[in-house]
Amino acid sequence: MSYAIFQLARAHRAYAAALLRAMDLHPGQELLLMQLFDRDGQTQSELLESVGLDHSTVSKSLRRMQDAGLLVREPAAHDRRVMVVHLTDKGRSMREPIAALWQALEETSVRNLSEQQAESFVDTAYAIAEALASRALPQEESE
Image (cartoon, rainbow, N blue to C red; front, side, top):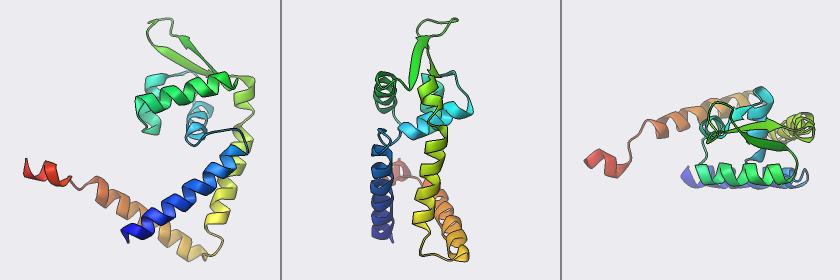
């Protein structure tokens, strides 16, 4: 089962990356954009927490996205050390293409499944994720 999960994740990630490349995005950048679509003007720390990636990955992604003209980062009025992230018009224009990308990814992913199989898969995937998240790592168990 673990190898099947690995293969699935790898294939899904590769296809998603190909779709993102066609939009001049790197994997993970669409997640940051989606968070900003929901609530523009978040701090880097808020974005970091919402996407669950490490600080250096988010910082590098935001820098690339700023260089691409998708967003701007500016110091917060209340604390100049805190960076607030805002979408540009170009960044806001990515909302529909990203929604279409996710729709295409999902349609391709379930192409060979019945509706019942797709629903069962989602339930199973969440059950596995919950089991893994609630399980302590071996070295933590012995401490």
